[in-house]
Each structure stands twice: as structure tokens, then as C-alpha cells.
Image: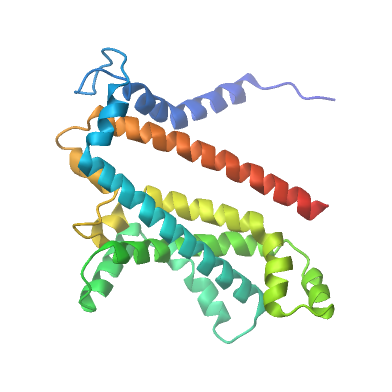
Length: 263
């Protein structure tokens, strides 16, 4: 017997979606606003999508954001995956301590983590630059990758790896031919999470970025007092579209990987 839909839960779900997506819709709508004040919608225009390319400070910050996010995501995904596989496969004395310490960057306030990274770099007389920013993003996002990949590893049958080794495959061949394809959906999820954390990070970036490594969130933060121009909304809209397309593509790839594993 099918249960009837409860109108209360339907209304509640609609309110939740409105709360989540209304701010995004406002950003997209105001990217077409003719008013520079960006307070009241006065008219429709595409001019801000053209003028944003001539905003050197904004585009340099966007370029730095993409560079930092791409490199930090790649490094965090590789290191996090290897760490997750190592913690799952090997037994050693400090395994419990290392597993527990991975949660520290997640549970502590982001401000505390940022200050810790600042003190570390300062004590080593390292000038804040793009490298310190990337290292901080990798350190911050890698635990999320490890936890995501470990949850995926826990769900697959270890006898498949044992069968591959019994058939003559060494550790490296077993990892790339058997282990990695099985945990690929988890690796993709961890990579997407690391990418998201890097793209919208403000606190850690504020303490570890140099003068020549300003990223988009910090640039927008510096513009808040004077007012955010509509070309920022235009760039944000393009980033939203790109993120949605990337998310859809990742979901499709994960679905295909799941089907291949089941087959």
C-alpha cells in the first residue's frame, strides 16, 4: 500500500531548497543588472560579462584561484589516496595515532589551523607566497580525501586483491589494475571535496597567501567595504555554471565506474 505524501514535508522541502538556492539565483540575476550599485535591479544587460575580462585585479585573482585549486586538489587526492590505502593495508605501531590525528584539521576551528600554519611558516622564515598557500590548502583538504577514500575501501572485497597477487601481479600492478578502479568513485568524491574546499576558502588563505598570490575569495573580501561590482557577479555566475558542469560530469563518471564494478 502506497503512503500518501504529507503536504507538510513537501512545503518543508521546498523551503529548504529556496533557502539553499535563492542566494545563488540572486547572484546570477544581478550579474545582468545595469546598475553599478548592485542593490536594486534596474535593467538587463550583458555588459558585465564583457567588462570583467578587462578587470585585471579580478582576473589575476581568478587565475590564482584556479592554479591553487588545481594543484592542491591533485596533490591532496594523490597523497590522501595513498594514505588511505596504506592505513587500510598495513599494520604498524602508530596506525591508531595517525588515523585519529587525521580528524584534527577537520574538527578544530579553521582559524586555529590558519594561525598554526602562519606560525609554522614564520618560524621557518618562509615568505608567504603561492607555495605556502598551496601547502596550506593541501594540508587542510587531504584529511577529507583520506576519510572519503577509506570509507570506499572498507566496502570492497579484499580477496580480489589477494587473487590478483596470487596470479603473479606485484603490489604496483595490483594497485593500478585492481585497487584503484574499485576505489575510483571514492577518489573522485574526495577530489571534488578538496576542490570545493580550496575554491571557497577564505580563512586559511588570508593567513598564508602572499602579496602576489591573492585569490578570488580574498579579492572579493577586500571589495566588500567599497561595494562589490556586478562584474564579480558575472564571474561568479560563470564559476557556478562551471561547477555544475563539473559536478554533472563527475556524477556520470562515478555512475559508469559503479556499473563497471558491479559487472
